Length: 124
Image 1 (cartoon, rainbow, N blue to C red):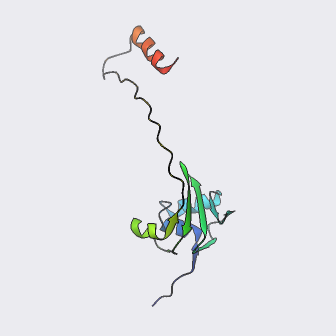
Image 2: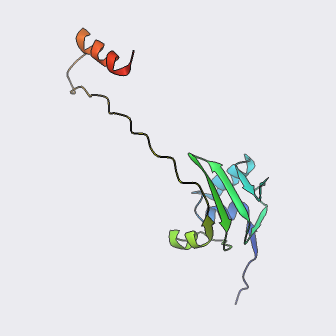
Image 3: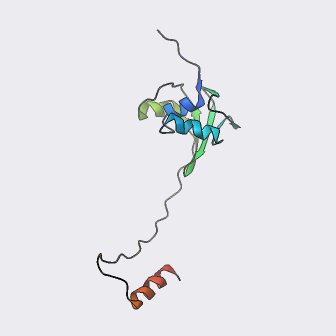
């Protein structure tokens, strides 16, 4: 029976818990300085252990997770959720933008009057 691993490479763990779609994306994020372990920038080969605080910056928001279990291989979403404790702030609310009026397909160019109405709607 294989013994339980106590550490793993940070890029491999980020990929295994599904914070990145590919391991090469996780490696690139580490090299670019977007990953911090215990408030220190890390290289892809740095190790993580249970209890480490990992901050991943990228995309629309920052993810803050604590390592709960070491994974070496990619697992399904329920198992990945059990391997980390998520302390991330909630995602920002989407601001609903009013939909611009659509012209009928094949209606041709807008007339001068329609163009002025469109500009008034856009605030010009």
